[in-house]
Image (cartoon, rainbow, N blue to C red; front, side, top):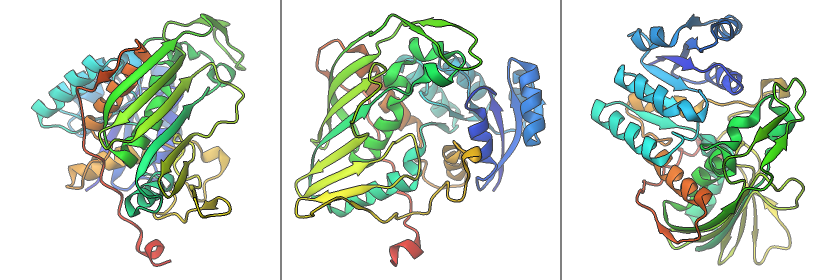
Length: 368
């Protein structure tokens, strides 16, 4: 059954969601709202939807699903208001700026009998699911360790005002980290313990983006974090998350099994190639995808794309398992908040989650 969706927040990521939701099964992109009403009207005209105010979205019984694309500092406020209005909610990452807020809104959703979901959803793509199939099939053997390297997104070069990325609720852990941690939980299950140290690199940063609205930003959250993350399964991951690493030759993520190594492509993308090298292999090889590409056939002007997580929530309303769940988002946030805090004290996680169910393997791909 198709569900009408309203987006609150028409900023930088909005167009990626609008493109993705226009392709998603079971989703009708029906309305949008923004505190900047002119921006909402322009977005509505471009994608053929209604431009509403936030109170109008929350009061409309024909809009059962809200997608929260506001800045992280406002995620809790907007999500809470939508849940109290009886809406199912999918939020951009992180679910909230703090773990305490995330637990509060997740508890509210449960009490209201509503679904709450959160980005990232990129592990639903062919890369995340192909890597998952390799791990589950035992091709690299028992996974012993992992290496994860979250490096600079260079936001100062492309975002006109990236200041929110350097405030509480941002930083490398809470900005880019969700993609990597959600990917790891998809592959390895929940985390048991985190040890981390962190620091601020440059306290003031210049902005170079064309069309910038500020010349410099003040940094108020750690920008360089190094952590040891131990999973409940016993896998030990070495994790670097930094906005101070620009040039480098690091991989995005690797899993180390007793039979070989699995190379995970950028978890911010859906469909890049996954590579594997067993100890007996002379070189790396690309693993055949196990599910269809979510972005196949799209040109550069149609990317980036977001929205499969919204379709995941809508499918869950119709009885399917929810993979981008509130429990996953809360657990990932606790891990990342601990990494960012970097207090040098081993911390046992107070939250956990189920490993998201794998996406069903495509019959034509399983026959190859």
